[in-house]
Image (tube, rainbow, N blue to C red; front, side, top):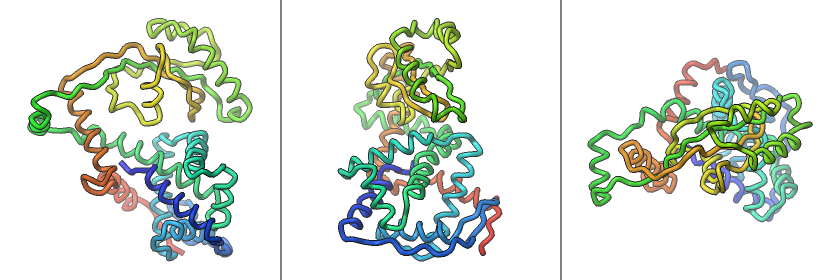
Length: 314
C-alpha cells in the first residue's frame, strides 16, 4: 500500500522549510492545455503548481516530470470515481488540519505556505485525496489474491515458536445517517447530533434495523465477521477505542456513520494467522524493511490504466 501519511509528511516538512527561507512560488503561466487524459485537461497552470510541489520535496521538478505525475494522478482519480471509493471532502479537510497541526501550524498558516510556494490549497488537497483513496481501490482489487500459502503459514508459525498469532474477531454493523449531497453543508451538523444521540439508545445488533426504521433516512448494513487487521484505517482507532457497543461517529461521503460492535473475541485460526502476518509484512514495507513502500499491485493497476487510456499531449 502507498504510504500516504509518509508522502504528505515529507511534503509538509519541505513546505515548512520553504516558508522559513522565504521561498516564493513562481508566477503561473497562462493556463494552456498541456495534456488531455480521457477527456480531462491538464493545464500549464496545473503543471506549474506540481513543479512547485516537487521543488518543495527537493526532487526533479521539470515540466515533463510534473506532467507525467499529473497524468498518473488523473488516471487514479478517474478510477477512484468509477468504482465509487473516494474518501470524503471532510476526510481530506481533517487530514489537512492534522498535518498542519503536526507541523505546529494552523490551517491558515499552512494555506499561506502553499500559496507562497506556488502550490495552492486546492492542488495540495487534491493530492491528499488521491493518496488516501487510491490504496483502497488497489486493495479492493488485489487484496484477496495476495494470500499466504500453507507452507508460508507453517514457516511463519515455526518462527513464532509454533504458535498461531492471536487477533480480535469482530462482528460489525454499519449505521448510516444519510446526507444527500445537495444538503451536505446545511444539515451535516444536525445529522451528526442525531447520530451521536442514537448511540446511547442503540438496542443491539439484533434490533438495529427495527431501531433505524424509527428514524428518518437511517440505514443499517451488516458487515459480518471482520478481523482486526482487516478493519479500514479510518475506522480502526474508533473500533479499538469503543466503549460499549458502538464506536464514535465519522462524517463520510454517505453521511454520518458509526459502527455497531455486535460481538468480539480473541481468535487464532488460520485466517487470523494469515491476516496478522500480512499486516506485519505491510508494516515492514512501510518502514522500508521489506522493499519499497510502493505496492507492486499499485504499479500494475496504473500500468493497465495507462494502456487503456486516451492520453493526448499538446
